[in-house]
Image 1 (tube, rainbow, N blue to C red):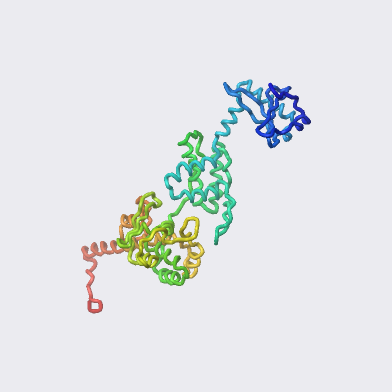
Image 2 (cartoon, one colour):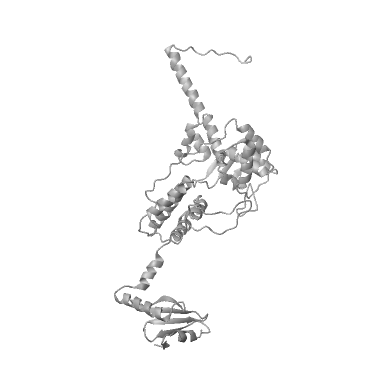
Length: 417
């Protein structure tokens, strides 16, 4: 075998780097121990084994961090294991093929969520970075603050997926849940989904998120009350941004999700028919929104010439090309209006709630808000007490009158009518 020398510290130190490529030298004491010298001068120990019909080079370490004595011992150990039937090269290959949780998450995003246009993909990545994986070191956005890990968050990106136990996921769920129980539930859902997709693609291990009982979640039923409306509209009228005023009013008057309002495009809107067709909603299907006259008037105000426009209704110099959620202005609006615990999404719920109060059926409410399932609309059933009360009053009046215990109400004219 060419270039066979006796490995010694001073001998290896004297080996010169080739002009290009690499040079290989073999030890005269351990026959299958070699050192490779690159053109950059790096010297690396390898042990050479035959795996079937192929020759495999198993990296041991670099010189001088690994001494000649240690390299010989490691080479003899691996050669001994190989003689007993073990293949360290194959073992390392299998080890490399084992997925990390970070790789499994990337697979979920790129092979499943993004191709299917899942609307929550971005939100899922935000939760992943904040609570489960690596938080990128990015500067704070304009008018925002730098994102940080959740106090109870972990970084399991480099953990092998078969090494994460159910006990660890249960502990993570409990610790995040002490301050943010709903977020804790989403974390477990994301982990469970990552493992479920990995199983579809060949993973045979257990899903550590399976069987973890979620924290109880109470469906939010906050909507704008009758006594809040005057102050809310007064506070909104006092805002200096026309874009913000229009955005808030369109959220309230259409019941559309804020992301749909912000990303609305002129080609989706037909003012002649007073219809806005959202091509891709959260439930994955197009939604047709009936524009009330006030909503149509706002859109005309944003397009005063009435010409055929393209692009965003709320354009902005941003990464997306449209306005971002106006968090600071929203908080200032609530402060002026004297309102607490009211979110932008509650504007959507407000339309549905006032429909229910006005006696609209759940089917109509669900259709107007683009709900795919009846369950999403059930919350409005408990908000529509006025029409329920009116119906009960009518029925009980009829029963009592029929029983003769209550007289029929007299009808009197009001102001001569």
